[in-house]
Length: 145
Image 1 (tube, one colour):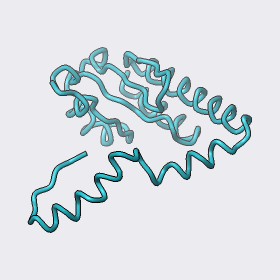
Image 2 (cartoon, helix red, strand yellow; image 1 turned 90 degrees about the vertical axis):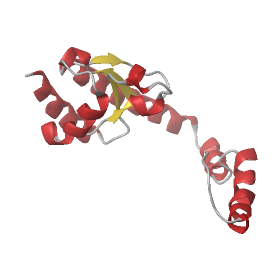
Image 3 (tube, one colour; image 1 turned 90 degrees about the horizontal axis):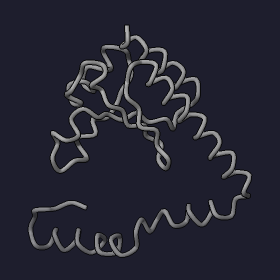
């Protein structure tokens, strides 16, 4: 989704591929989906177990660090509420987080029509190597001290 301002020729050039992508949702990715469907069930079972373990590792660590955690059921992001840490501005919190403890997060307000409603929520990705998640959890626990 998006918009473009340009000469009529350029708009026409952009509109043509956009039309095909709109009606064929992520067309190029369909090859990857077809390949994934050919994989044995064990591959998907192992992936699900791995992601569940990583979700639980990060969720538990975030809770220990003082965040209120909303454990996801179908994504690889953990949403948290930063108010228990004495914070309320997700943008400011996320901008300062790398310097405070070397971890990054995304302010959920960017996904809200009314940004103030999402202001105290930030999300962390757990689709990382397990050792990276352990290090992130250790660093985030510094926020609680």
